[in-house]
Structure formats: structure tokens, C-alpha cells
Image 1: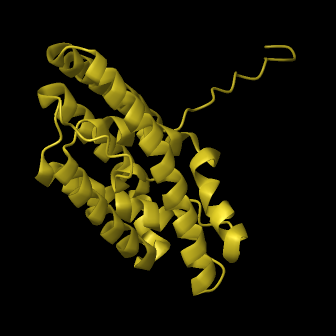
Image 2: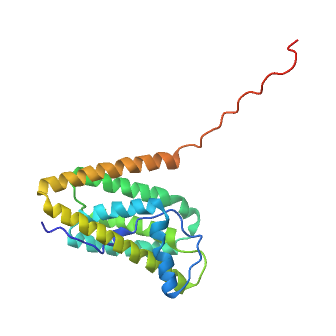
Image 3: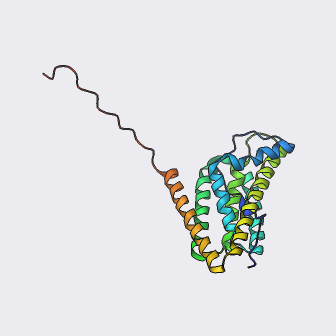
Length: 215
């Protein structure tokens, strides 16, 4: 089976919740600050898992072109004004995760056009979410580089593990496993959509007790 181990796929950096509040630093400290973004937010951890599964379903050429699309998307997201674009972060994340899940359930593959398009969207969301609002160009570059580098490493390790596991299975069993994982991703995405866009709960205030003579 000649599927990629595509450890370095840029499809890695699925968007997180907005992280623009932090102030970036330069040099190694800036790289570390950027790298910590992938462990600070649960939805980014979920996105990394989705990216790893998607990467394991790509061929080598598809993975490389998706990586280029992600880098271009990150640049575009970095240059995008934060408002009102930040309103689209969660829809971009959940919509992309849901699309990956549906594709995996249907085909257990990631075709080139879909992989490149999803990588572009996720790159844009990543650039928008993780670039700090304070600091000069050098600090911004250091932070974004750290985030992308750490995410790519995490995706590479998990995607490589999935590739090894698929090689140990029969081809049909491996495809079935991808479809099952896709269904799991879709269920989580639907739950996150419900929690994100559900109307706020209302608190019922009990009626005040009646006091005094009813006469």
C-alpha cells in the first residue's frame, strides 16, 4: 500500500478558537509561544486529530499540494482583518471537519481538489486565529512559525501511526476503519455545532410566595 505517511502535511493546522489576545515575543521564545497554541485549546486538539486522519487517507502528491494550499491559506489569514472575520472561525473549523468526515465515510480517500480546498480554508482559519494582535512583524512570524511547526509535528506523528496500523490490516479492513473514524468525527462535529449555535438557556424564576391575608 503506497499511501503517504505524509507526516509533514500542512493540512495539520486546523483552526482553533481565537488566540489573538496573547502578545508575541521574538526569537526562540516566540516560537515556543506559538507552539503552545496547539495545546491550549480543546477544539484545536480535535482539529489536529481530524487533520491526521485526513492525512492518512491522502496520497503523497495530494499531501504535498494540500501543504502548499495550507501555507497560502495561513498567509491569507494572517493578513485578514480580525473583525468581522473572527465570526467565521468556528464555522470554518466545524464545516471543514464535517466535510472531512463525510468524504471519509463515503470513499475512505481524500481526492486532490477537496484536500486542497479544505487545506486552504483551514490554513486561513489558522492564520486568523493564532496571529497575535501585538508585536512587530518578527514576533508575528515567530509565533505563526511555532504554531505551524508544532502542529505539523503532532500531525506527522499521529498520521504516521495511523499509516503503520493500516499497513497491518487488510486493505478493506483499513478502509472500513477510516469510515468508522469518519463517522466518529462527524458525530463530534454535529455535537460541537449544536453547542456552538444553540440559543442560550433561560433560567426560570419561581413565582414569589403569596403573603398576607388574601382578603
